[in-house]
Amino acid sequence: MEGSKAFDIGQALFADGQLHEALPYLDKAIECGFDSAAAYTLRGACLQSLGFDLDAIDDFDKAILSEPEDSNSYFMRSISKQATNDLRGSVSDLREAIRVASVDNLANRAVNQLAREHGYGSVAEKYEQDLAMAELQLKRRTIQDRLQGMRSGINTHSGEGKERQDC
Image (cartoon, rainbow, N blue to C red; front, top):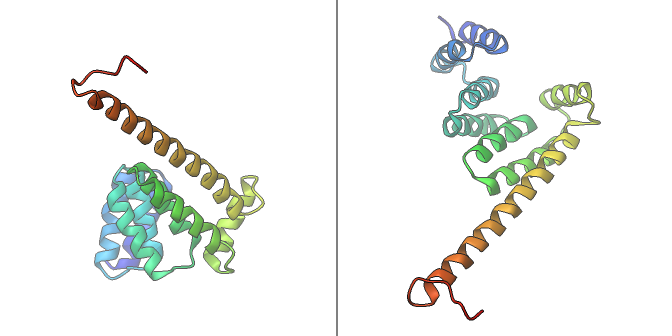
């Protein structure tokens, strides 16, 4: 089976929600040389939906290398980075998605149209909302880490492994 035919079948299965069935066709498409950004982005989305976020990140990386001005690939990679607790990476990708979203190309026009259909003025507006949430989550994680560090210091600082009673 040639790559473009395998991609078309995988794309149709993915659109139909048949993720497990779509994945082998998307693998085959890429193996057969249909290794476009669209193929990597779609396979990344499929892997992401199946919970294989590290593999999805690899595919989004390849899509970005092929088409660095497609804002959706940065956005999708940010989702997988967040799922793998790489909150800094997620925030960075969202910032890049916002920057790249202003580039006028076919991919960005398509995601802008989709964003407008969902009530956003632009896809950048949607990314900005997601960025605000991701930054909040990162701040919360930083505070939790600091508090945990302080608690650990209190528990071990007394020399006996007990909290200090004189504070």
